[in-house]
Amino acid sequence: MVDDEDPGNVEDVDEMRTNVLRPVPPVLTSFGRPDLPESLLVEKVREGDTDSFAEIVRRRTPGLLAFLRRLLGDAEDARDVAQLTFVRAWENRHRYDAAWAYSTWLFRIASNLAVDALRARRSRARTEAENFRLVRGGLSAEPEGPAGLDRQEIRRIFEECATVLSEKQRLVFVLHEFEESESREIAAILDCRESTVRNHLFQARRLLRGEIRRRYPEFVRAAFGGAR
Amino acid sequence: MSGPLRPDAPCPERETTLRLAELRSRDALDAAGESLLARHAAECPACLPDAVAVDPTLLFVRLSASAEAEENAARSTFRIARGGHDAAAEAETLVADVLAAIRVRAVEGGGRTPAGPSGLRPWLRAAAVVLLASGLAAVLYLRKPDASVATSPAAGVPAAGRPIVERLESPGARVYQFASATPSGPTVIFIANPDADL
Image 1 (cartoon, chains in turn orange, brown):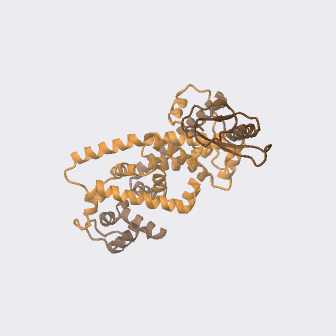
Image 2 (cartoon, each protein chain N blue to C red):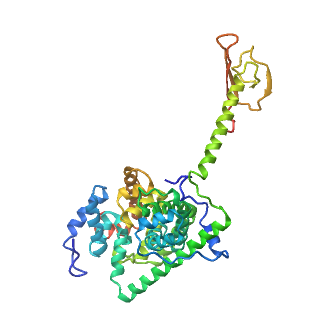
Image 3 (cartoon, rainbow over the protein chains, first blue to last red):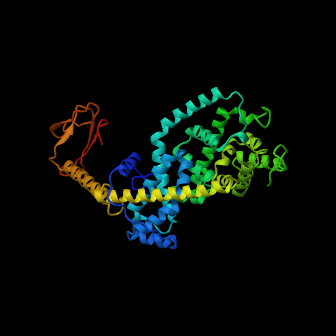
């Protein structure tokens, strides 16, 4: 999916941060078009209508940001990638194929950009996860069961364990388990076959099971008194 | 599937949950079963530890979009209203930033041009054509009867071969020359150079 022709490929998300900090000419006006269906908005976007594009950004931002936060585990990175996703979608508006849902097109761009971002920070994330485990191990005398964890802690455990996944495996796992997308939808986003999606999911689960068992054996022993 | 009546009471769905978790741990659970299991595990604090013990990846069911939405819905209306406002404000900020970035790029004049049929591809096609033409020219040049042949002291060159007019500074290179069927026929020569930078 991540190829040179895809609009999602970027050199650096930091570039976006630099751009938005520069002094800019007056921003294009956006009065909003809440009454128009998205298909019509997309048509107008392809003709270069920025007001329609602003409305699409407005509508799609919450879902896209939520997905990117789950995938990247970092709100600031998610926002940067979301912003770059929309810019790429605008720049490549003539390449949008109406055979696909516009959301699929956006998620495809976002996925490519997110995979690049994950690759860029992979080694850093691994180091941080190891440090977190050390700190946690040092502070927690009584290991908590899974039901006692809040979502933030579960998120941290995921970030920690997901370092064993490839970017594609992580992407598929997040889309399937967190976004609750079907294999067919994921295949469309990744531009691959459903069997490939299922394979990535199978491998991701297998790796995560092993990693959770290794790092958190107390969770596995919790129910069966160490029988498992 | 429903949860236990009291937080400390055993869940009546425990056996079903464990059976589904077992199937999931073997990747043998269908989509409907997975959905049912995930929803119950996310909601039932009594079943979650047991389910996680069977399939540790069920630890993450509470990170799903639907579980998050349900947890948010359980909060006070004030927080929901405030959250909705935050989301709208966040979207508006992003809209402004995106439009500003688009404007900047437009003013900069193609710092990032669309990589579509009118963008990157023609250059790639042109580069491919140039490479192909160069390769073809090289082959034709080598096949000319009086063409210069690069060679090396390596074995495999007949003693009555073409004169050496060019040195090939590569110790591992081998030159193979095949005799033509007729005196005026073309001579085929292969140069195998493991150090060649292609």
